Image (cartoon, rainbow, N blue to C red):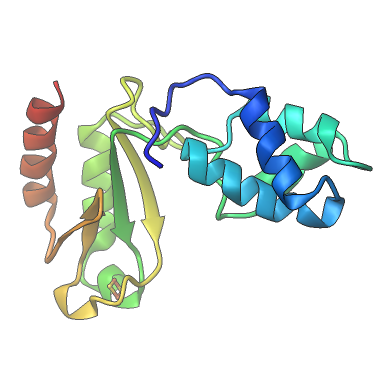
Length: 164
Ligand code: FES
């Protein structure tokens, strides 16, 4: 299901998800995975709500679990989701300069993964299985091989024009 990342949380929908798994502690990870699938990230209000609904858990515990696991994102994803591979082959062939070029071009501060206008979100991922094309970026599922700092800036500018 594709969802606008800015939509408000819907407690009836969260109740449905919680009921479908059962409101036990042991189902928390599965519930969070499903909520993230629906919203594309874990909105803070959803974590608080889940914390009030699952037996034996508090909102603080649910929040702690969500921040502990790398698979969960507490930031909304952008319209364009950029993944920069930082597996060994990509790292050796220059994925970090590409990553830094993206951060600089999109004016992302340290720790900020989504642009203020919601157009882009950025994450690093481990090997995408396309090492022969290193360094590799993926934007909304499309693979961009043998990336360079200059090439990624041209691609970003094109997406910015298209996204406006
Ligand atoms: S290390 Fe990047 S695709 Fe394998």
